[in-house]
Amino acid sequence: MSFFKKMLASVGVGAAKVNTELHTTEVMPGGTLSGIVYIEGGGVEQQVDRIYLLIKTHYIRESNDRKVKETAVVAKYLLTEGFTLQPGTKLEKSFQFDLPENLPITLHRAEVWVETGLDISSAVDPSDRDLIHVVPSREMEIVLDAMDMLGFKLREVTNDYAPRLGGNLPFVQEFEFVPTTKFRGYLDELEVLFYPMGNSLELLIQIDRRARGLSGMLSEAMGTDETYVRLQLHERHLERGARSVAQGLEEIISEHL
Image (cartoon, rainbow, N blue to C red):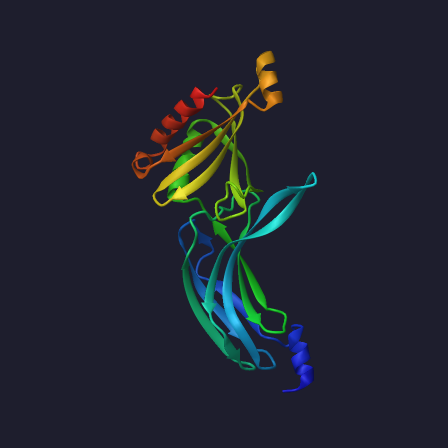
């Protein structure tokens, strides 16, 4: 094994390669992710400390009046411990992992991807990136259908820096709705955060009232035109369907106009 080959491998030339094939690219929060990782040895023997999978996404953080895009690790899975990868060797590693319930969904510009990596001592770590399409869970779908029934249009979905609200994540995924029928003229927007809890769902709703008259303008200027409401939707509530959830949401919103 020549010194020259070792040096090339350390900067990624003729080094090991990794590629992941997912069984499906469409998943939902709390579901499973499965596939096969293919590893191919390079031109020299290399010590692999571990193989891992990362679930990553972007979020926006404001810094000095600028919006900065940051990368967050939503979940990390260890596939193997250390081993020696011989030159030209081809290996396969199957995997199946449970995804976190708070995995962001990929609506609008939100992206989620799987990054597969090999930790190789004193070398550039080879990696592979695969985008996945995260669809709403059954519980989230019921709420989204209920919002549609109430005439709310989903305007934007963003991942925003909020470590106090994000639990184990530095961000929250915010769903921003605008009224088109019943609440038009009364609300500027409605912002919803989803907190999955098994078969139940907690919502944090920000109700942003539209300024009307002098008192409304003063409230808007003082920031008192916004109300935060927490709503717990248990399994029995969700089983009644979107129409029943819509009725409950309508009552709560109407109370805070």
